[in-house]
Length: 166
Length: 103
Image: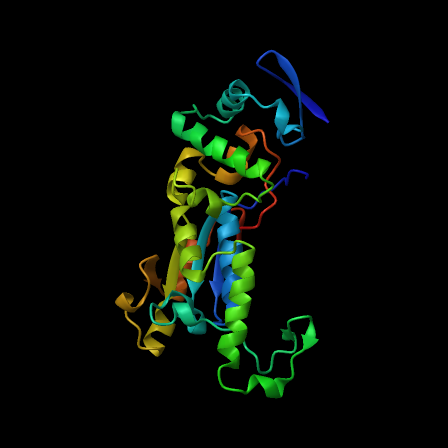
């Protein structure tokens, strides 16, 4: 691989959605950056807060209704009407998590631990916290602080910095 | 392909400095690669390196998570032993190919 003339030094990643795939996109990008020695800050807002809320962290699901990419095992089409059955969302999410475990992809709590162990920082959005009536103690311990948008932008300065919205 | 002189021998390395042939590796070479990267290897470093070489020989994909579960170091400790890019750096010192894992 060729060396970049202007290497990436810092990433600020925003997660605003609470579905399995959106949360994982954020976590894989964040952990990958930490592994590369890139300074990493992750900002969870709106439904993304579910991924760092104690009561919600273990029930992050993928959408089985209105998700055209959804497939049954064997790559068979997944009819939207099937998705309306009770428990289907939990089942599909459970199966997806099982497949990920096979690839040694960590669970969400473990991912948060890994990111912070490597020096990455996790933040929550103040406005969304107020909206969902959440307090600091409702969030997992890995959360470093609750920020306003302005606070977050203030952390995103510097040469070689990118803001990523997943 | 580049070569490097480690402990009196000419060793084939990739452009990024990973040994081409993991069998060329010796603990002395490990110490020399570590020094190039500003690390003085301790027993703990070697315990991690040997664990990684063992996993590699078993054909397993190396991940930060697997090292964290080795019982030798936790993930935080791994970052402390091999600062910055622990999986890459430790692989390089262990004479293993550049890690191909995303997690």
